[in-house]
Image 1 (cartoon, rainbow, N blue to C red):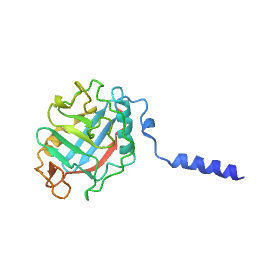
Image 2 (tube, rainbow, N blue to C red):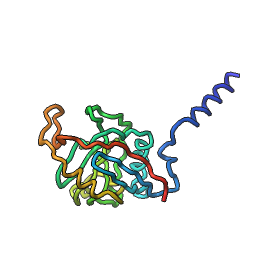
Image 3 (cartoon, one colour):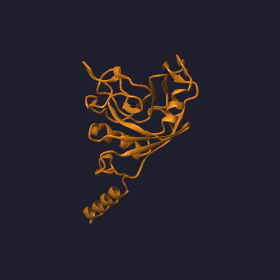
Image 4 (cartoon, rainbow, N blue to C red):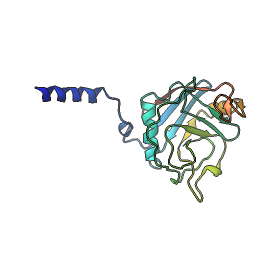
Length: 196
């Protein structure tokens, strides 16, 4: 009887559990995600062929709503708009384990692409991402590791431009961060779109 109850509980928990990122549109090599921000919408198309581990990791956070209500905490004019790691009170979001760096996948840090942020160590990306607001070849791998591009914007370039124009402080005293926006834009919601 006890094994039957345990079996039933396991079945119920599996049914109630959210889909893992591996199961999200498994036959769609280019899933799309819509970002609804305080400055408008952006739709990105991800590339599972070139960055399978990065896309899987990213979709996991989108699927559970973990990017909702986060801020773009770093805006460098003519360079990048970065977010995904902190809420409006600057509390760090749960990261999970770092993922392997897929920067050698042939995708370049060009205007309108989305890439993973990381620390100095190349294999430290977890959940933060950035949009390139110009071509940034210095972020591509040459003699070492670069920053892994895993998709590109398909609509909403005007929103990217609005985000990139938000004024930033050279130094934020409370955190010690550079390029922190005076009024950080909000990522209200990130959602996976139905396959096309």
